[in-house]
Image (cartoon, rainbow, N blue to C red):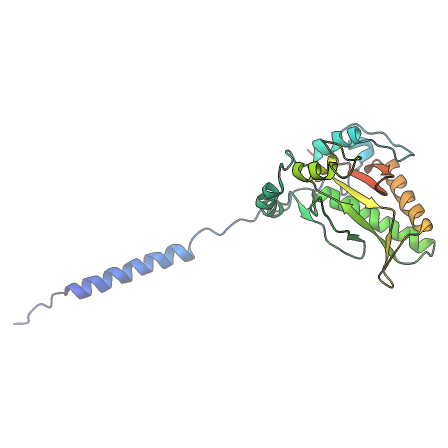
Length: 246
């Protein structure tokens, strides 16, 4: 007579552990993959601001768009709510970059950043596209006039309410509310330019004229709003966006 072999407690324990492990592996490898959202549409590239801008704008042959006018477009196209503090910005901006709401602005052969004491190097994608276009057109004009290889400096970008308050204590030209709050606006210096051939920083009248011509050209096309800030030796520039395509 053949005796039956009964499983021991150790065998039950081993089978239980093995089963648990197999279930865990199944759910680990079979879990839904994270879906990465594609970049949001860019409402600057390939659009006609003359007829399709999100806010009222008319072509102009001068650079004299005051803060109140730039604020209309900044509020319409930029961040829905300004950052109150630098700490709030620090805790939020990475997620906004991941969602393509903000883009980091970095040094390149097209432009360089001056030391940003009161702002952060982030803008909405459309504003970055605007700066790139300014820079490319500017470079083309320099090449045409055989003036050498230069790029301009960005001196102020995205500001928080905290940084604006600190800035106003040192700069009487700084208002309580600025288009810089909305990541749509940048200051481009006309005081100095970077010579890309010998890495020197120089003032040059002829270069200023070509930068001014570039901004005037794009202002006529309603691609941007700009004003010359003489105390700060910069152009204060806000992007103009188009309405989303239906």
